[in-house]
Image (tube, rainbow, N blue to C red; front, side, top):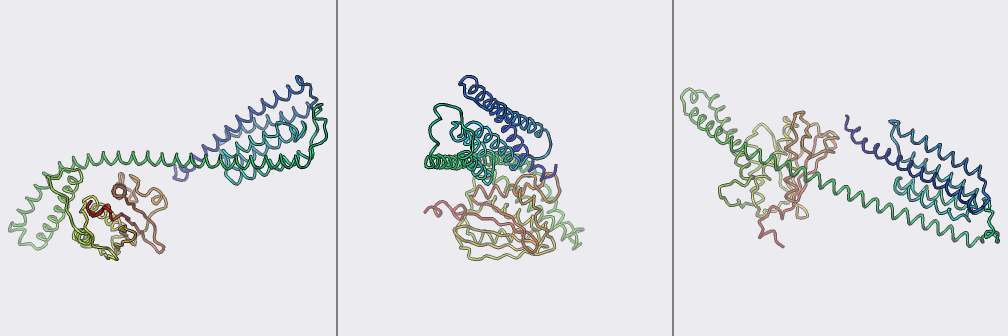
Length: 434
């Protein structure tokens, strides 16, 4: 299923559920109006235009039946369609009230029920249109209606002042109802969004724990073969056949450098897993940490042209974090893979007590769906199964440090990934205290 269809599916399901709920409420209204009409006519002895009122009720029932058939169609149900259904309800209620006393009918305030239903189901512009529509019907019924044949209503007509007060009361009640129901609905949606974010974060953290356990086990298993390869390469470097061939010697040296990089990665995994051999955290400075990290990255990728600049970065004491080093290295790796022939730019800046690292490349940039799902697991632009874990881990490392990672496409081509971290999270505890 295309990504757009996946995003529209919940909206379409919600529209169908809203229409079904409106249909159920309308059946209750039909039953309630039928019972009320029959009771007033036959038990209270009030003379009503029974044929006309029952005809309106039959039209409403037929409309509701047609609405039920509409839910079986695969077409999406929009807010405008729900609003049109409520307009029919308003029209039918107005017709019934016109035939049964208009403003003097105590059921005039059923308009508020329709406004309340609309406040739950509709968007704000449709809600206020519904308020205006019901208010207009309210005004019409004050002037045009069929009087009820009841002795207690044979007194003179209602005064304009009283009618104006009734109208003002109705408008105030409808407006307050809309405002409070809309706010409550907004608060509930915000709560649901926060709960969904917390569930997503919990699932991601559980995923990280599982990967950490796998990585720690793999690091243990890789230690022995890496040590064996290191010994073999060291022996080859001193053998006469290899020493006499400059090309072979260069290749062996490159293999030793890459092997040393593998051992450093394994050591970093074990350090991150808490399996260091009683070593204290390494204290350094921000300048030295950034410079060493860039130098180490460039030494393993001599073919990549990296432009590195520091601007207004204070040389504060920090704790060298292997996870932070791997995170920055991973972002540079992704940028280098996106544009291997073009130069990369790494800018280090400080502002508002935050360290901002910006990596700019001249590659094809991020696809729109990648930007939406940036930092989610298995969202990769490389087309490989299981890809995208590097950015996923980087985003979570930044989140653990109280920061964030943002991505965007540059206006004239290429992409930019920026890492924003609070300086206090990098500094030793004794320095970060206020």
